[in-house]
Length: 65
Image 1 (cartoon, rainbow, N blue to C red):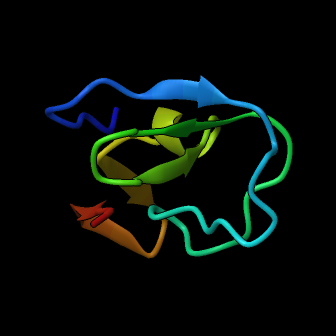
Image 2 (image 1 turned 180 degrees about the vertical axis):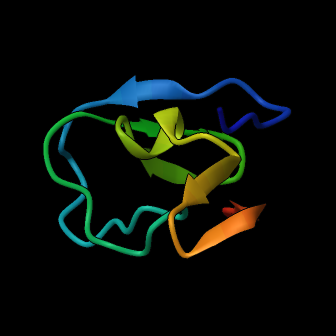
């Protein structure tokens, strides 16, 4: 799970060119936004694990960063 030090608020789609700071794609619909630093994130992107396992990398987990 992705964690940030400041609270994220669910925002309505009021920004037409806002980009998710986790995946880099445009945000559409509801998304999380930090009012202090303007950090944006899809709700799905905030639920990604920090480490994932893949069949091609069985010896070590991949870190999403």
